[in-house]
Image (cartoon, rainbow, N blue to C red; front, side):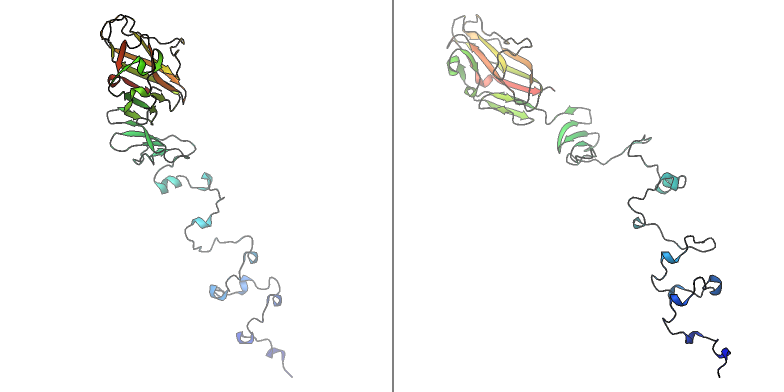
Length: 317
């Protein structure tokens, strides 16, 4: 008959692997006091065996050494808010070396320096348009670009230029023209008979040489001027003419709505006119046009030279 004492000694060889299961151990029977220090090592714990539900809600690490690594982006969710209260005093300045500017609004005590930039990629620009803003090409120059093109240029002497500002100057092709060149006396537009040629044009191709009309590309106030070269080739006193600048073919373009009459060669017998230069400031809506008109009084008695006739204008603002 076997004695009880022969059964109570159990060594490690008496336990078959995987034979002791959770149900074999009564709750709370395995306590820290029954486990020798260092007996349970990482190598003896299967990967994933210790999960959060097997740990107490509160862990005392006060007497433990905790090994840590730096916090990386993946450790924080995109919705995690790190407020100033969670940072030590001066932590941001100490680590960055400066006080960040609040993008919602702030006051800077130093100077803001930017890259030089370009017309297509300005140094200072809006959030929704990458090719409109301010840039600094070189030295003391500063430029304003819109849609990738220079709208205003300021050089080192503070001189301002507007490369896209609408402006033009046109001249007729040399040759004498009489009233019958335009169809007789009365109100006549200086149209294609002038054989207009454009000497320069900015801010778009808005002057039409085929009809002598300048069409406003944008609404605003415009300044126009013209110079005539006139000759009375007879002794008739009625060889005078009226010349004026017209808007959309209208005669009444003065501020009061009257026809802006000028008079040339009145009583001037068989001679050249002393000179005729006219100017006008008109408000134009986009798409309205301006052209030159003349009223002939006598058929064939007077003439003007297209090659010396100049018509010019520009946008004031």
